[in-house]
Image (cartoon, rainbow, N blue to C red; front, side):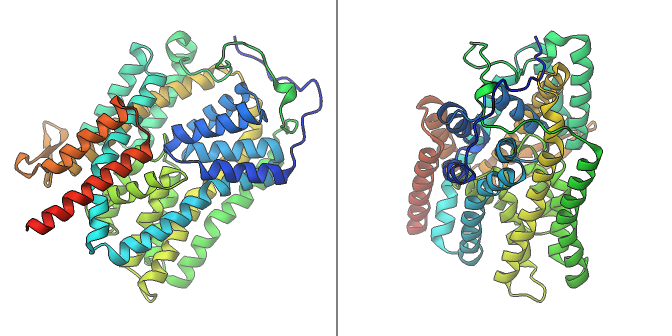
Length: 462
C-alpha cells in the first residue's frame, strides 16, 4: 500500500560536508558502466555501506530522476546530495559526477581531432564500434527486464519501437503519450501499470530506517522558492548563450550548438541511448559537425570513461566547433564548443532537481507517479531498441539506405557491404557480455585489442 510521508522520529545524522565530498569523489571515480552500473555503485556506497539514506528514499529519488530528461544517475547523485546538504551538497555531488568524464573526453577529443587520420586511433576504434553494439543491446534487455512484466508493458514498448522506427514519430511526443497513458491506466487498471514501485525495500523486510537517515528535514515547496530557483538557473542556462550570440553571432557554431543541445537537454528522456540516433542524424546531415560513423567513436569514448553516457555530446560539440572554428584556432574552438555543449546539457539537470525535489519529497508513495514512470520506461525500451538496430546496421554494413514503402520508413542495408571482421568482433562482444558475464571494461579492452590487431594486419597485407 502507498505510504504517507513521515517525519523522522529522531534528529537525522549530520554528515560533515567534507566527508560527503570525498565520498562523492569515490562515486565519481567508479562511475563506469552506464546508468545501471553507476546507480549500483551509488546504492552500494550511499545506502549499503554509509547508510546515509534508506532504500525507500533512494528508489523514490531514482524514480523521479528517471522521469526527467537527462542522465538519471547524475541527477540521482544531485538529488541525494541535496537531501543531505541542500544546494551545496547537490552541486558538489552533481559536478563531481560529471567532472572526471569531462576532462577525459576533452583529452580524447583533442587526440581524436588532431590524430584521427593516424593508424593508432583508427585501429582502436575499429574494434570499439562493434563492441558498443553489445552494450546497447544489454541496455535494452536490462531495462526491459525491469519494466516489461506484463502484456500491457510489452505492447507499449512494441508500439514505441514501431512509432519511431517506421513512422519517425518525435521522441518527446512518445514520452508525453506514454506518460499520459500511464496516468490514465494507473487509475483504471493499476495492476497493469504499477510495475515499478519505489516504496518497497529490495530486501523485502519492510523495515523503514528513515529515522537513521543523514538527510535534512523536508522543505515545504512554495511559489516564492520556485520563482527564485527558476530565475537563477534559467539565467545560468541562457545568459551565456545570449553573450555568445552577441559577441560571436547567432550564426556561429557555438551559438548553434548551445541552442541545439539546449533543446536536446529537455527531451533526453531515458538516458543517452534514447536520443543518440536523433543527435547523430542532426549532427551529420543537418549541421555537418560529424562525419557518418563518428557518433559511435564518441559513444566508445563515453563508454570507456567515467561519468554519464550523455557526455558523448561533448565530443559532438568539440568536433563541430573544431571543423567550423570561425575566427578562432581549431583547437581553441573545439575546447569552447566542448564547454558550451557540456554547460547547456547539465545546467538543466541541476534545475530540474533543485526545483522539483521539495515537491517530489511530498509525493513519496504516490501510486500514479509510479504508473507514469512504468509506462514511460516501457516506451523507452522501444526507443533504445530502435537505437540498437540503427547502430548495428551502420556498424556492420558500409551502405545503409532509408526507404519508404506504403508510408513505412525502414533502413535497408546493402548485403555486399557487410564487414565480416566487425561482425566477428560484435559476436565476441555479445558472448563476453551475455555468456561469459564479463564486465564492460574488459569487453571493450578485448575488442579494441583484437580490432587493432586486425586493422594493422590488414594494413600490412595491403
